[in-house]
Length: 144
Figure 1 (cartoon, rainbow, N blue to C red):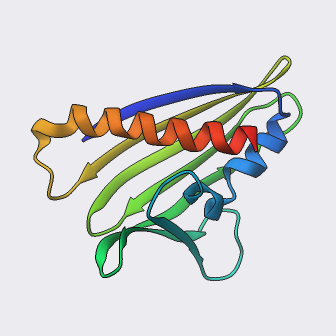
Figure 2 (figure 1 turned 90 degrees about the horizontal axis):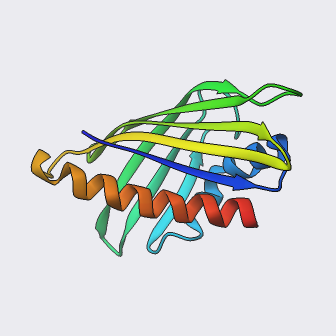
Figure 3 (figure 1 turned 90 degrees about the vertical axis):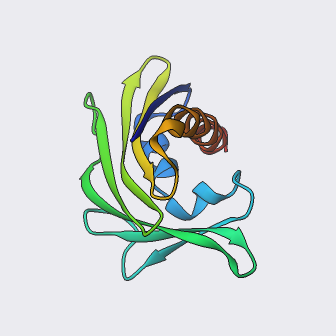
């Protein structure tokens, strides 16, 4: 599995950064050829499921995710969200942490992913692509 970590600082408050980072449908904005759809009622909390569809026309794949941990930041405390990736092509997990830090907050995104058809020899390449992609997503959402 490819394991990677991305960190960003923002001048936003921890609750505002959390709100932006957990609006799942907005994660697709800086990612070409990707659309995200929340499945079922509600958009936040444990049990929320969503699908990131990446592709062009009939060629593509769905990355199914479910929120399994939901602890929003509160005054003086960090927040943590964990997603389990349960798609037919992409498996693994992602964790988003939001830490209060003057003058705003620090965000850490950790992810372990496995692309089913990709040989493990390419894990380092997948991790590098993940750092680039999710770093771009984080920067976009925290700048917003």
